[in-house]
Structures are given as structure tokens and as C-alpha cells.
Length: 344
Image (tube, rainbow, N blue to C red; front, side, top):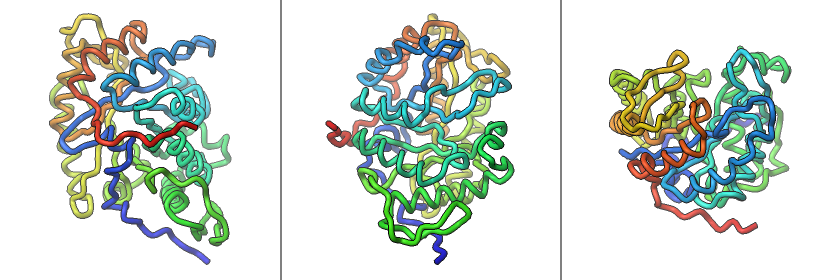
């Protein structure tokens, strides 16, 4: 029997008011901030990553809303850095045990490279182990070199992405779902455990993921999009126009949050003017420049900004503490829902 998962109430109108991870990050007309891991780059010795935990402890006690981990299975030198070194799900499990308040965000799981049964089980497990703090960013994969290693065609990732989203939804939200597609077949005789803490997991589509804006507006719980230029006011203005157009496509005008990101080379002087580095991939600026940018993004309709500091020129501990003290208090986490007890 072929069964296409029908949109649950979350497609277009999903509510996450009781989801601790979502509610800490997102509220209408507000912007919160998160931090990308790792906090410094891999330079050839994995032992150099030691020390992340102490900084994460300080971030967990701050007004930061979230920690973000990327999904980069294979290191491709053509990208200039190896990205996320540790497996994202293993890292999220470590973070679930290490932290108490922060939302834990996959930014983003590459759905076409993963079977959706595994993604669904890993996501629901992290959500349970963290007390309901997982937010699932989902991407179609921009590193084409990874796809042949998995025996997959990069050009087919868009269709596989749509199927994977439907499977993850059904597996985490339905009892004994019936599914049949190129990904496999479930006849309704088995179920996936555990289920998420609040019944569903927020899923953010990353970029276009090979989909139309209309599809994203209907099927995503939020959108993780790229910011454009960040050193001039025209960048946030153009971003705001893009977000307004996208939100007009959301069925029923429901609130769906938008996330964007920036890699920072933060200086000690708060007045350093914003300067793009590495063809605009990194922004060199002082504290005031960061605050101004985040304020412009908030006015443009962005609800969360994920900041990366691994490409900066200063020690990560100093930069993280500067952001904790001088930036996060201006854009505090939304303290609406306390994570569920997770004393495993």
C-alpha cells in the first residue's frame, strides 16, 4: 500500500508554544542569538579541540539562545575548512548532557545523505535526552563531493529531500506509519521510538534545499536563509524584502521564524567598522557593529542569528565572553518554556 504522509497540523499551522527549544529561540518581532560549534578551527590535531566545554558552560548560563552544529561527513579541501569535525548527533548528545538551558540546533542535517529512519530516531532521541531542546535544521547538501561516496546523485537531492521530510514527519508524529517510496516501505506493523517530547520536532529548511519558496512556506516550520552582504545597510534591507515576500506565501499567515548567520572576526575595540573578509564570508567588526547588524536583521524580520567565531583572529574564549557580556544581553533568549526534566 502506498501512502504519502498527509500534512499534520504542523504543515502551515504547526504550533510549538510548548516546545522548549523552539520557544527559547523564536518569538514574533524578536531576535535571539546562537553560537556555531566548533569555536575554533581544526588544524590537524583533534586534541586541539579540548577546552570547548568550559566555554559552552559559560554560554549556557548566558542570554544566548542556542548552540549550532553542522553536518559535514567528509572533509573537502576545496571548501577552505573542514567544517564540523565530530559527528553532529554525537555532539548533540554530548551537549544534551553538558547543558541545561540552551536550544540545540542541527544547522543543518543533510537529509539526502541520511536515511530518514535514522534522522527521525536520532532527532527524537536527542529531543528526549535534552528535555525537548532540539531544533532540526535540514539541508539538501552543497558539498557535491560527498554524494558519490554514498552512492547517490547530487542532482537528485531535491526529490530525495522532499521524501525525507515526509518520512521524518510521519515517523516522529504518527503511530506505525504506512510509507512507500524509493526510500523504502513501511506497512504499518512497526513504529519508531522514542517520539519527541512535545509530539513533534521543529524543522527548518536551509536555503532552498532544491525546493520552491511556496513549498518551503507550506512544509517548513521555519527558514534558515543566507544573509547577503552584512557590511552595508543595503544587505539587511534586501533580506527584509525577501523575507516579506516569503512570509506572504505562508498558509493562513502563520508565524514561521527565520534564521540567518554570520562568521565574525570580532575585534577588542567596540568601534571597529564592519569590513568584509574572505570575499564576504567573514565580517571583521567591533561589538557595536555586531549590535547594529543584529538590530537591522531584527527590523528586517529575522528571529534568530547564528554567529560563528572559528574564523576569527583572537582566542575563542575571549570572543565568546565578549559576546556574552556585550551582545547577547541586547537580544536575550525567550524564557517562555522550561526544558522538561532530563535527569537520565
